[in-house]
Amino acid sequence: MKALFLRLDAAIATACRWGVNACMLGLFALLALGIIQRVLPVFKVPGYDELVELLFIWMTFLGALALWREGTLYKVDMFERTLGPTGRRVLESLIHLSMLFIAAILAWYGWDFLRQSGETTPFLQVDKAWWYAAIPVCGTLMCVYSLVALWHAVRGEIEAPREIATLS
Image (tube, rainbow, N blue to C red; front, side, top):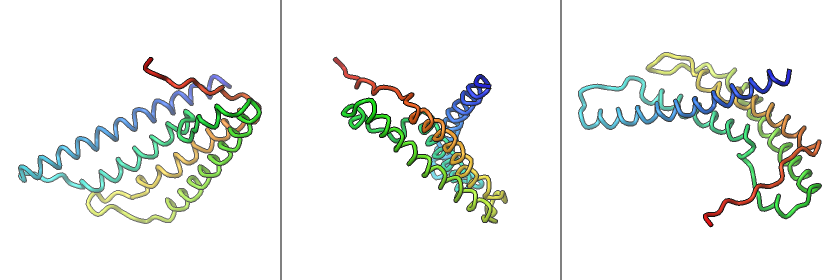
C-alpha cells in the first residue's frame, strides 16, 4: 500500500512539474505571438485572453501545490534553528495545522465557486469550470499533503533544520 502512495506522490510531483513548465511555455508562446501580431498585424490569435487566463491559473495553482508538497511554501528556518526538538515539533504542528486550514478553505470554497459558475468563454465557447477547477483540485491535494505532514509533525518525524548554503 505504501508503494502505491509513493508512486501516486511521484506522479503528482511529475504532473506538477510538467504542468507548470507547459503552462509557462504556453504563456511564453502566446506572448511571442502577441508581440508578432502587433508588429505584423496580418493574423490574430483567437481567444488570446482566455488562453492566458487558463494557463496562468493552472500554472499558479500547480506551482503552489508543488511547493506545498515539498513543504517549502511556508518555511521560516530562523525560528526552527532557535528551537529545540520539542519546540520544532510544536512549531511544525502549528504550521501544518494552519496550512491544512488554508487548504481546506481553498478546496471548499473553490468547489463552491466552481459549482456556481455557469460562465462560458466568449470566443472559445468553453465552460469556465476548466479554469476554476484548478482551485478545488489543488486545494484538495494540498489538504492531503497537509494531513500527512501534520501526522509526521505530531509523531515527531520532522527533519532537523538544514544548514544554510554559503559560497565559502
